[in-house]
Length: 608
Ligand code: AGP
Image: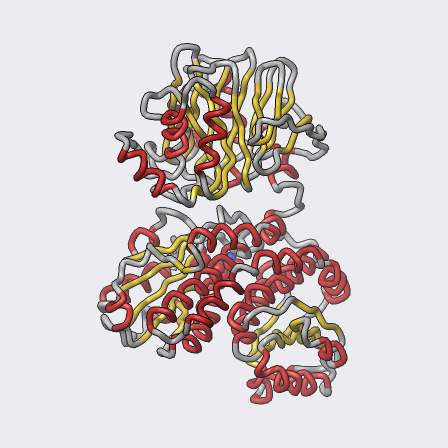
């Protein structure tokens, strides 16, 4: 996600801003920029690509005077990566500059309003709306203006604001997206995260939602949107720089597991308006959507596992044939595809070669392609016919977690949207699914708050040699992901198996002490899965069962059972995957593996 830095003091600001942005590079970005108040005007320098480009443009900051400034590394959500879309964004007159981390969900309506009032925009971003609104409402008091602008914004934001009319202050605001205030001697700082300012100070304030910080060189005042002063507890950072980049977590993977509630909220909430699913990204007319006779889902790895979950969901809800296919297989099997086939392509990076080539093969055969991608402006995103972005922010750990979960959330949105369009779900079901979807972030938070049991089980089981994940229906689809997560970071061999298939061969591998992780969340088939549990137990297996907390009787079946909160059947994978991610993480941690960078693996496989 984006990174913010700000400085107000008596030294040249630009070199510090660039050093601070360097410390935020781990957050992932595609462009960067800084803005300095040189006493007479706001000077902005921005560059697409790596920070090196901005350093070259500014002679490492030495070319820019001014002792007040803000800087930004951008992770694109609205508007392709480019110089013009990079932050900071200026108002039309150039008197106000803004940097922003988050998503302004109603930016289009606000932009249309301002354009109707004669305001000219330069960029495609949601952020520019904030700078333009400040200028539009400014009557001489910057704080009042910022408060008024905040009342117009829907969404999440961490903001840094400077003005040529108010040269001795930086205004910082937080809502959902983190922002900290660094406390210096004769200088003060703002930053998205601790690493950016750790070289200057270990003393910080952490802004809470709807708090506004007013920074001068020798004072920091924090108020709420009623302009009431807020007393803050000063915090002293004890972390090292490396630990700070992971938000205090030991690994990016764990940090990203913990980010899942927010990531799912960020991905679904802009697409649910007044209780209706809105997918403006899909260019197809209802008639075109109704004309499809089949859906193909193409992807690799964990993204493919999302496709398998989607197969069960779409076929159940939409009653049309769905095939989830490994991209690397699809493209070489002379697939049966035509213009009556809808192709959905799923990819976190948007650069996976097998997936990209499979997409092109489908397009060559006349299929319309909708992609679900996390990296804005990536190859698959730009070459597909429609793209629905997951707003998971950059995923640093090689083993995907939050992107997988965000992809599932988009699948649910599509299922509800298409089901309504095809008339295969009624209004009551529609409302039920939307309400269930909105409970996912909190239910995942509940699971994350109660992860000690999974940690304990991992500490007992991390020496297992072969592990089997079994399940039926949607539990089987999820078992694929549980097995891969474990394999790729702990290097323990494991297999995912349809529970009903075990007796057709693989059960011969079950012996005394073999660990079998049985997923039994899919209500209609619990009894059958229990039979499969018994089958493997009679052959000596040690069974860890994953079930919903309305089936406590399963604790008497398996040797150990982890319960998750109940949710509608099609959304169970979003909850059940979390204990499996945690189990893989804790097992790999107990084995001392390199969790964020597992051997032999790359984050994006751009070769065949
Ligand atoms: C998942 O943990 C793996 N890192 C890998 O299977 C990954 O899902 C696969 O390579 C697909 O990558 P993509 O989503 O970027 O296309």
